[in-house]
Length: 310
Image 1 (cartoon, rainbow, N blue to C red):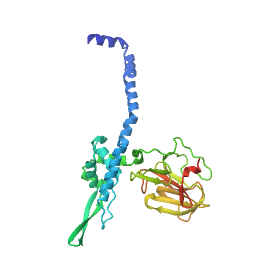
Image 2: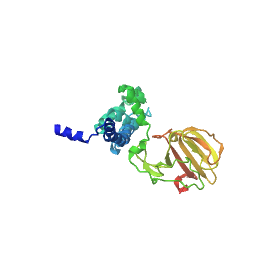
Image 3: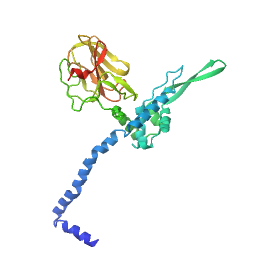
Image 4: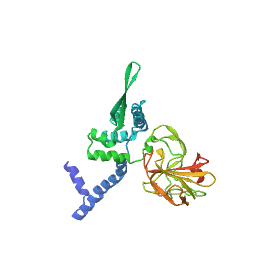
């Protein structure tokens, strides 16, 4: 031990200033380097649920199963959001989804349903009872689970991301895509990341294959959305899965649609010019995170919007 100490001391400078510099160079610099090297992965772990595609499918099927169990001739039932199940378990299991299983996922899903009444109907010689349920809010379920304030905030932070990334499908648009504007203007100038292309895809909400009638453009909430062409607003408001949406009719049976907006700044029958702001990016309707769903239709039939920008 004494020999090792003498060897180390032999490498140390004689004066105090040099010793300090030596410490900074050989101790602090590596520490800073390691901190920066691992900061990205650590941040990613904190922001995104580390659930695999197969595990996500388990939560999707569980949510669907429990939702279906609430339906009967006297009740339309409730729809449980599988993403909330994933976010809760990301916190409960501290991102270790190897602890997740279908039985526990089902028990968690059942916490979202509450029986609020029943209908008794005489059918032949027997009386059948049909329960009526309501959907508990996320906060109600988190309270049942005795989550702390920090845990509740973490669940909601997980839910703020776009869950389509967890479903392991590749967008049909090459990385680095830049639209070439011809007849149409790009609805989000300067923002070109396509997270879901036109055509068949895995639906990010229901987890099954469905036809996607437009393209999804990733953008922060509040980003201005602009009209792609001169036209007339034929609808501006709420429209089911579209959320807040604007439909614009143009000449030659051409129509464009802008969905999942956070707010709308145009009115029905208003004439707009290409480039006019018509609303702002949001996540309303059937959406897993802030983005613009952009559609182009000709004669009522959806066509690939990117064909207008190649």
